[in-house]
View 1: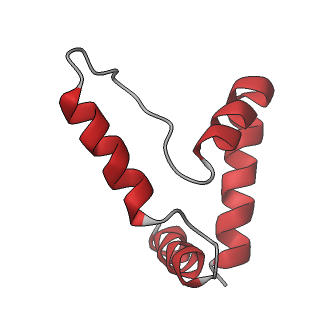
View 2: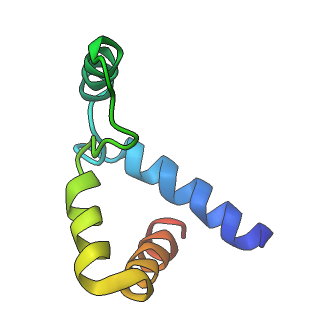
Length: 79
């Protein structure tokens, strides 16, 4: 488990350090401001560069394919 956790840390850092690899903080903060102002906020929000494509991937192909994509990304970026 420690080996996988280490790869997740490396992949996360690589994603944030890569130009265009992640969403700008303002995207998230604008959504939070919107949520605060809502009378009945939703329980989940798809926010960020890859949120909608990843949700679609999971919905269309199921958990097994989604998990393989995530692990493949972690293994690639976590090297």
